[in-house]
Amino acid sequence: MKTLILFAHTFWKDSKVNKALLESVKSLDDITIHNISTAYSDGNIDIPAEIELLSQADKIIFQFPLFWFSTPSLLKEWQDRILTAILYGENKDLLKGKKFQIITTLGGAESSYDGHHGVTLEELLKPIYHALKYCGCEYVEHYAIFQANVDNLDLNAYHNAIKLG
Image (cartoon, rainbow, N blue to C red; front, top):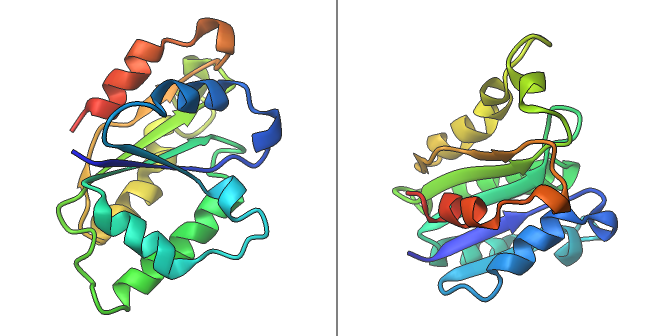
């Protein structure tokens, strides 16, 4: 299965956890890491190139740190531009049958996302999953790394999460 990790991070230069995660999978077979934070630091997304990357993938993973209960802004811009281009483009079924998963890192404890602040992590991620489901993707259980810190990273669990689906 060819997996595309579509990665975004508002503060990529200062990242420690996500850099370690991506470094740990960069040599694995059938995984393509696409860091849109570095590819599009100017915010100018190359729609045909993105569609080509998606066409080659069997599984698509959005990986990002959760900031203020949402994705980094560039990932939201990517969704707006690319999913709209697919929906109104020549190949509306481009994503049909592809697996879709979210992998996210969070600074807070798991208990911070249990709903006592008004919303659970699952509820926060629903809009992303619904958008990709609307485009034909199949849901794969998300993977969250709470209290993300390079000293407590379980790389085997991360690798296993990528292999789900």
